[in-house]
Image (cartoon, rainbow, N blue to C red; front, side, top):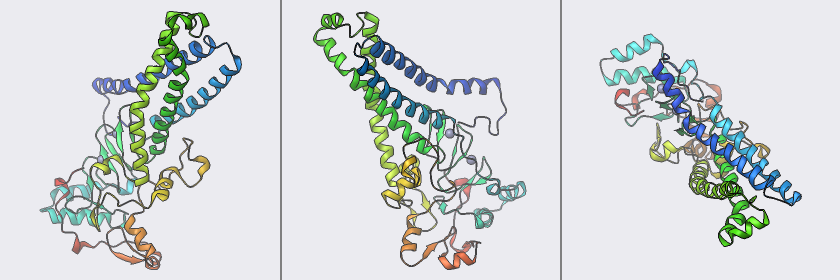
Length: 356
Ligand SMILES: [Zn+2]
Ligand SMILES: [Zn+2]
């Protein structure tokens, strides 16, 4: 969930904001709660005479609902991953950075500090990315979220509907949440479609058959359930489709709008594209039995990501670029765990001028 408290003192105003941010989640929860009553009580228990049909409807309904709510819960309450402490600049270094006489000096300080960190991303001007608010070297694909007030690993976007940042640790849950929400809405819409059509064809006939419990409110609940199901399904289908596309391209929403800039190769939207299956496994894991369950199975630690350049290098005889841009062989890398900064090639502007 969002880290509103991170680095902030609690004030009455910030408490009000914290409550305010939960309103979209409460709204969604209220809609789900109402839909449960409308479907289970009004449609199935009061509206169905055939017990077998009712049992089948309720079984699939509850199966979909459990997966939907489980994914939603995991998306909301999975903490935003914190950047480890060794990525944080000590106070002395921060002071040196701010007192540096020019941009080159600032860049040297950052390069020197990041020389052993696995960073391949750079700012527009080629500098190592630094967060002035968190005082850390930004790991690849991470961004500072102004709502969570911290740097978020593999940040996708901040989603008000889950009151959390969609990031490395809950991205799988988020995609599953969209998928199961869509299935839930479609299931509800299709199983109420018959009642909806019959209502418009012959309202009186429905009352006689007791399919709508013969009451105005029961009828209202089921008709409204159909409309809500269709409405949410239409909005979810495009969002879910877009995120499936992003998963297969190994791209975050932020990267889709602005390509990540690599130390070697510059801006490249396909910089993390390892092929569809590998991209999918990076988010959903290697074991297919867990693909569709909201259990964490994503590859990696959120700090370091295999790149397309690296994969290309490996396929061409073991050459790859290291974090700071040096070209090395795999055997060389095994002999030395320390990466060296290629300071001669880092002719950049200072971090101050760079976008977050
Ligand atoms: Zn930050
Ligand atoms: Zn956030």
